[in-house]
Image (cartoon, rainbow over all chains, first blue to last red; front, side, top):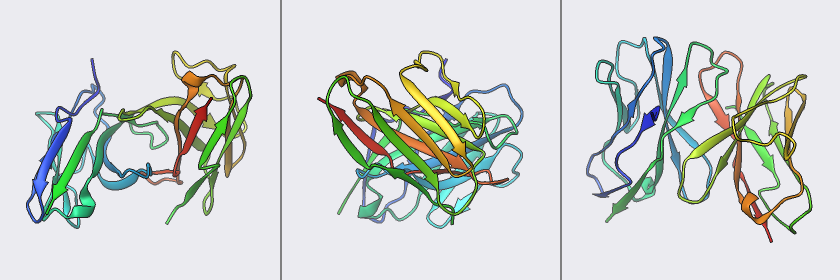
Length: 116
Length: 115
């Protein structure tokens, strides 16, 4: 079974609109971390946001927020007021266990296209 | 912030030759570094976990004799693709953990093309 599932291969949104990128995860470990990364065509991985499994509040970082629904095992990324520069591939990832030195497990990604 | 560099950023080599890719943490010490591989339009797949001063831990299906990893210091890990073949052409990305931070910092990646 996949540990990280991103069901949207591609998403299209207009500038200034909000968009939600879906991510569900599967783990039996009570301690885990969830990440979102942006990968533009240049290939670099840009860290966007992090949510720990014990965090009580949803994480927010500027225009990015993470809609964390623990019971449903979902960690959707919400981008408010989309910009043309947001067009990129977006990956949801998980670190299982409490050790920060554990490798990340990535989903298949969602390609976001923002139009004017 | 924490910066991870990779060198080279892209490389073309002939089939049968070996290629070394360097991953450096520029402003922090990284006891653990990770090597990922990414095919076009696909996800990042973990190849191996590199720990300073010890042997790397390879993921199932990754040939350790083909992908040699050395983590000789707290700021440098190297991945050597030995006897490269066209199917090894891919984007290789390293990441490093910074101290007690939850975040992993990624290098800019190395695009390998084997002709």
